[in-house]
View (cartoon, helix red, strand yellow):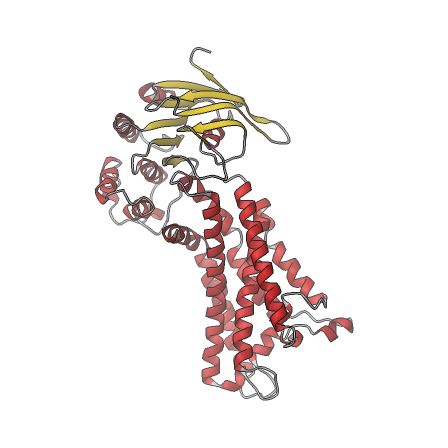
Length: 212
Length: 243
């Protein structure tokens, strides 16, 4: 049974085809990476999978059709573009705010994530004083919070140092072992080598697998 | 839903807080300064200075003056809001989408945020009027005008509803083009100044056009307009891309 299935997904603007007949399947528990140059359509594919944009073609997640107007069929942790954070809150408060929308999340999960990403050292420091890398780590922590069935990350290694990337790889593998499926868009080939269980390549709005 | 509202309010407030404090302070200071000018003057009241507006007779005589205070009072909520609702929706919807919130829920919360900002603005500005009234009732009510307590309560209520309408129109335009969304309220305000249409819901925000016989009808029309534009907003939010 396919966990995620895209069938002939196309997104067109007046000027050009942004996604062109994209079709692929993702099984539960995979770590799929989307690789491609800037503007190739990686982020747009993630948005299509999440039902954030209207497309033609079929997208199904956990056997349910994905549509913008409907609720998303499953719970998903998402980081696309810039993390949305309350600048006047500290790291814990930002995660706690998100946790309040998912009552099953325990406080210790927040502390664990802060510790893994070394954000616990920031203590009560407000997010507005965070560096770009710290904000990125907090955005990733938001996406990983709750270890949802599906976790979607767009360029997660942006602004991260080597040590933080190593921490990210470790935590992604840990969460993946507990059953979460990952879809990660990145152009960081070293990170892809470390993390990916399946690589997809995106070029001019089309998706190719490794064999192609 | 309440948790979603709280979450969105915090992001919304983060964006608007500076504009909110600055603009509300400006209006409140203006009220106090005009209140000082009308102090112990039986022919003037601060309420009439703000909300007299342009009468139908004046429009017909084709010698219309620009009611600056009325115009500013109703435009400022739009300047506080700008395209913040659109910003909140776009920055947060991606994350909230994964938590199984529907576009309809996000749209409904946006409407509540608009009503909260309308309420906050109307209440804080009328609180200053109330304060001035406590100091000297003649500043607000004076024997030579039609203004009385009931009219002030009616005026505050109708202003809250009209501000909600103006802000929702602004958000409707922001769905298509956020940068020019403020144009919507400006056009409606200018249209009201120069047009004597007796069914315009903004008529009752001008004391000079106040018609006690049309009160109920205009209130009813206002409610219908609110329902219609809210439904239209929800429809647009539901059928447009979330990013």
